[in-house]
Length: 115
Image 1 (spheres, one colour):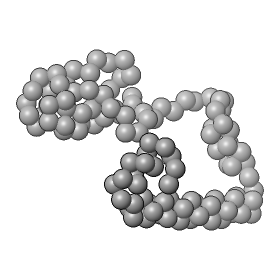
Image 2 (spheres, helix red, strand yellow):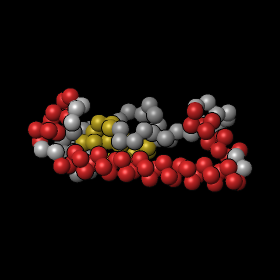
Image 3 (cartoon, one colour):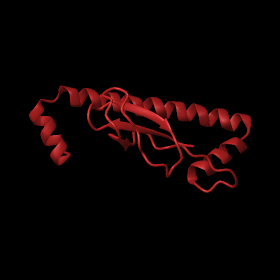
């Protein structure tokens, strides 16, 4: 069964619940004690695993990665690690740039996409 996140409409409290996909969202808030005030929010997509043949690109990639030889796998993992570090550096630079903007510059950037 997937795990869902619920948010209280009254006080904003968050609660994580494991329940079937089509179950009704009838929950009482443990913080403000209101009845049936939660709405389902999605911080992370519910995780569901499917057995059988791979049907998505991600599942096919995992299957192909498992089929690699030892040296091919090590080479791929090293390349993935280098790419991950590069992406993290780019994200950090973007965060620094955003944090250095004035409120007016941030507003302009959000509205137009231009710095």
